[in-house]
Amino acid sequence: MSLLPVSCPGLPLIVLVYAVLSLTLIRMLPATISLLKTCLQPESVLFIGWFGPRGLASIVLLLLTLNEVPGIPGLKTITVVVSTTVLISVVAYGITAKPGN
Image (cartoon, rainbow, N blue to C red; front, side, top):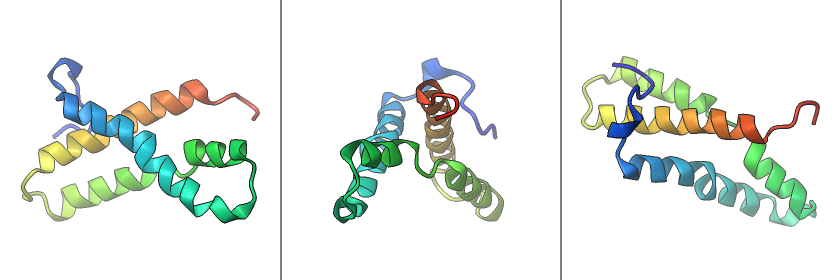
């Protein structure tokens, strides 16, 4: 089983929508809520929400799942969703990161 979807044309729209939501609303909302009482500038909160902890944990948890419980229902879907989200994450964060900042 491949960890990266090799063909985007067959990628279900719902996977793409979830991946984008994971990198924006689902990721940034908890970070914003947790920083409400810190008196940080809104720009700093946005920066932390966007560039904070990344997908390494997702990759590790996926690999553990593939190794420990390879027969669980929906594992192929889980693999595609995690892989797509991490791939979009690498591209999106790479495009928006400024060297030296």
